[in-house]
Length: 278
Image (cartoon, rainbow, N blue to C red; front, top):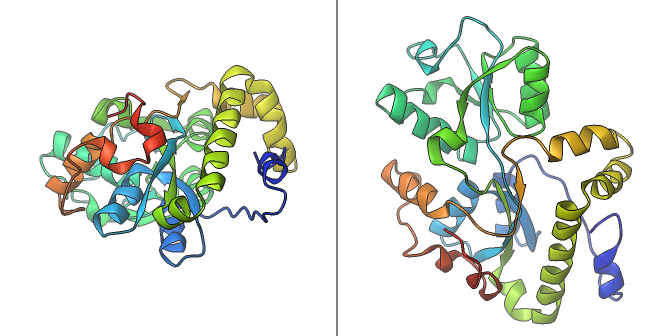
């Protein structure tokens, strides 16, 4: 969308500004402050905002992706190695990130307590976390594609996979403030159509999408690297929200939110109600 200027072409009298922030939590804070109207991020920061009264809903899901907890020490085989060792740090983007919820659920399932490893958690942006893991400054990194695959290629191994914990679920979604949706319905509908066009390009022609992304990032990653990352195992690009109910239920159970939606449809704008989500 950004590289091809589709929104600018569709709405020539509108100025668009793209910002890249470190986490869904940071994007949420920007939207609460009124500085951002359209954001993308993980399930957990969205649900925390929804629970606290942030007036936003989902415009679209973006992808389903497994999230891995990688370790670099070959002697670490499972989560038990971390229990009682607060000095063994596990990095993730934020304490209320989707990665944080995955760790809490895995800790409950495997160690008997969702809080078992909370003293091990440290907040780091994905690139710094990957660098810190590979240089052995931290013991574990619960991250996302493509960082997790890059870590494994450089010698790390995976001890938790979010798909084993929650099943296949949405990773990132697009959320929009209700104020923007209500005040600018034509702009919102254009945004939906343009995003669906971009999503279809990713689905139908990953190479072209990778070429545009590589150009947008000034070649920081090659087309080949991006295509490989886009087609990694377990990744699906889709607008269907998946697993929001599971996350909300568990997050309420452990006190991260005070309520859960009666249906996933409570979380989305009307354009998504027809989609078979969960």
